[in-house]
Image 1 (cartoon, rainbow, N blue to C red):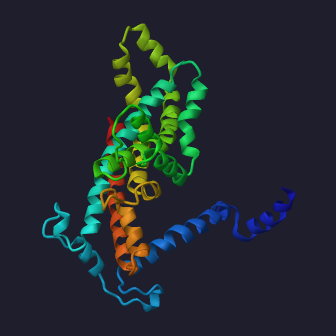
Image 2: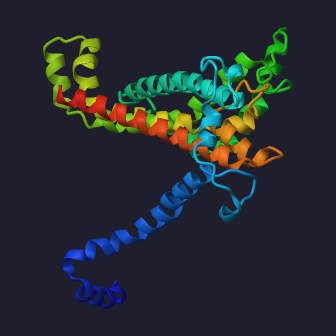
Image 3: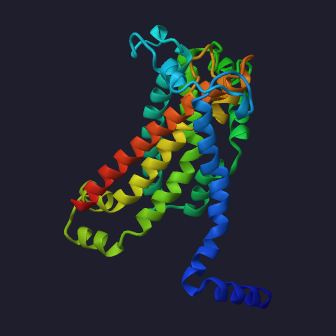
Length: 314
C-alpha cells in the first residue's frame, strides 16, 4: 500500500483533491468505453453501409436501406409477406419465447424464493441445489439436455422402457419450443431466486409478527405485506430476466440449432447467422437488426422503470 501512496500523492497535487475520484473510476470507464461504447458506434456505422467487405473504408454508404429492407412487409403479422422473412420469424419466435420464459422464470423464482425463505429441513442444501445450474456454462447445460432429449436419449429410453413410443422432442416444432423455454428457465432461475430471496429477507420480521397476532391469513399477508415491499426487487428481476431472455442464443444454438427449420430461431440467432454463418456475410443487415433489437430493449426497459416508479409512488 505504501508503494501506491507516493504516486497517488503526486497525482493529487497535480490535478487537485476534488478530481481524485475520476482517477479511480477511469479504468472502468476505459474498459466500458472500449468494449461497449466504441463497438456500439461501429455497429451503427455498419448498419448504414452495404456490401460484404469487412473493413469500414471498403463499405459504401447506403443510409437507412438496411433498416428499410428489414421492415419492408405487406403485412407485418405474416412473415411470409416480408422481404426478409427470416428476420420476422425470428422476431415472432423471440416474442413467443420471451412471453412464456419470463413469466415462467419470474413465477417459479418467486415461488422458490418464498419456500426457501421458510424454515424448512435442509434449507441450505436446497438453496445450493437451485443455484447450482447457474454455475454451469450455457453450452454445458444445452449439451446435458440434448443428451437427455435426443431421439436415443435418456428420456426416450425411460418412455420406451414403460412401453411408450419414442418422441422427437427436438425435431417437432412445438416440442422444441417447449424444451428451449424449459431448459432456459431451469438454467437461470437460481440467479433470480437468489435476488428475490435477498429481497424477502430484507422485509422486517416484526411486520409478519404483527400480521400473525391480528390473525391475518397467509394469502392476505403475502398480498398486503410481502408483494408491496418486494416490488422494487421484482422490478429488477423483471428487467434483468427480460433482457436476458431476448439475448438468449448459446443454449438454443447448441440444443436445436434454431430448428427444426426456423421453429426455434430467435432474433440473436438470426443476427449471428446473417453476419457470420451464411455464405455471404451481410454485416450491415445484421448490424441493423441488432440496432433495432437494442432500441426495442431500451424502450421496454424505460416502460418497466416508469411502471415501477408509479408503483413506488403509490
